[in-house]
Length: 221
Image (cartoon, rainbow, N blue to C red):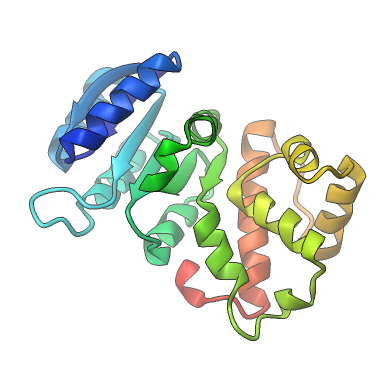
């Protein structure tokens, strides 16, 4: 699986390269700015990309804007965005693209190798990977009727929002697939039949729509 990385921190980019190569990925290019990233995507046609939100020269939103432009030029280009902080606006801009193949993770997630590589592969396959901290902030909104859910229902919805499939949910929570389906039926709008590559992303959008409609913050829209 071929990867292009846009990250201005030499320490982090070098660490990512070593980590990914050790896990069987091919790092096709590493760049430290948005123009370089766009050129690398055009040249190498990667299977998935990793992009820092803030890149030179202004260190504001150059990375996310480059990622969105790359997806306009190459529809369905898988993009995993890394950020140092939870920036719900950026996460929302990514999720507004309903085609899937997107992710938003905090940088400290990289040190959890199995979680990080699982998220990267999920994004490359057309799924979604949302950082648990973003989801936790949504679920912790004061006065949100989501608080009326049982603890187990909240766990199921949180993992759905991160982009995991039913089998992973059942394995992590030690529950049956039927219990996962029950939570989905009770709290999420029904989705039309879609391919497996799109189903995970559709469920993420359904969870976030549920949170918004029940008092969640508008900034994630």
